[in-house]
Image 1 (cartoon, rainbow, N blue to C red):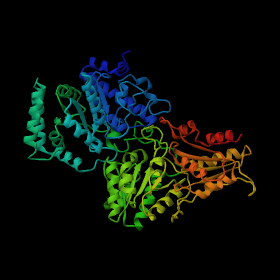
Image 2 (image 1 turned 90 degrees about the vertical axis):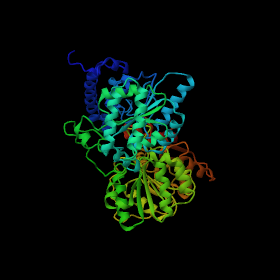
Image 3 (image 1 turned 30 degrees about the horizontal axis):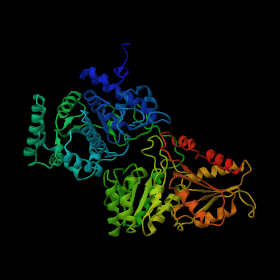
Image 4 (image 1 turned 45 degrees about the horizontal axis):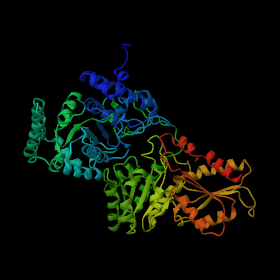
Length: 633
């Protein structure tokens, strides 16, 4: 019993109120050890979660959740929150299929305020909670936790504008750690850096902090703070917090986000004000675990690793990743075309653009967490004679659908959209699966959509897209490619023309049992299914459609006339997906061949390994073969 951890005794946040600050500090270390132990096996968002432990303990020590609401931005830093809200027993299943989500999830716990996963949305959600509280006449406290990079996002600024106008009581904790996934960029980040470096600012901050620590009157202290900040600081720097004060949001001086006592005291003070307060907290990503603290970008989202060394346990790779193949192909293209500009939104490493940024720094643009701005800016670059290649994860590009339509497609701008992580992505779950891009790209006039099935096809798809006029999207999945050689000289695809990749051994005049029209990564699975079906005596052809838009109408007509069944297989949402486009083409024909569409069903897919998830929805070779065989009976 003497060896029992404090963590083992914490069943809910109410238990934290019984602990001294010293005991909370011990608990923080135990939480870090638990996070490192579990993520070393399961992978996860390590650096961000380690950096936010004391913030979470302080907030839950002061609030009365779940009556009070604690809203996370992104939610990748919420592991400590899960551990102190009754989920220690399930924590070993973190990010596993059927286990605990890596992000806050209201269906998982009443302590989770919203299903977070994307950046910059927490302030809007928190303001909604605060306004609902006001309308109910409740005394509920609302606290939002947002990182400095996410605070620069457009949605966050829209919320701040409304928060400053309404001036309803709520607390915004700014977790200032100088990191998003890649290093933060932008003028706001630069101003914040100047504020951190200013000796005059530090003196004002320290003097004011001493005054706050010795005052029993919260409102007086905060008003004195605001007055001193405005009068003393504006002569020296243009700190980011000045912007918010002028919007009507009081701002505290920076405090140590790893000092639980200081955090609790400040939070208790600001919660007593009658308006919104931004509480500026400085933390260190990866705190308490040196490999993560020394390399927070790698440990932002990481697979299993060695606890002692921090070395990533990489499985022997049989092929390069699609992301790395794309990055290398783009560099090769840029060497021969000086008009190519690579763009991303705070995802330089994740999208494979680090090499491009190193070789062509003047032609690389990282806009920060601002997908709408990035896509809008790309159109201007195209109008100015450049060839922008906007490289974003599928799940994040969906935030910029309006700019894709109005700024790019309507003007028929020469922009390439490289859609990484298209399809199921695995352990990050429904907020990160890229299952909607086939819908929101195919529906747009002037847009062409390529779905390469392997790394060689990806290199040629990029080469093709750069030769076309107007917007072109290329979607490709996360993870290892298929292991085929990448050609030194990529080819140019004929627009809207597919290719047959598997032909059964039957006479030409025979009618096939089925033709599978497959897209992207589903081509390999479909070939596997066709081989399984051949073992059952069924003759099935597989066509790599290459283009989701325009569709190969000739190949579709051929499938309708030569087969007893037409099957489409896509790794995207069935509702509004490319399968429906094929059905529309079949409806134009006199032939009334039966057809079935396979893809992502009308539901959110949970976390889990990609292979397990594909199997669970019948999109592996066995599942495709089983569905086809059942329909042919």
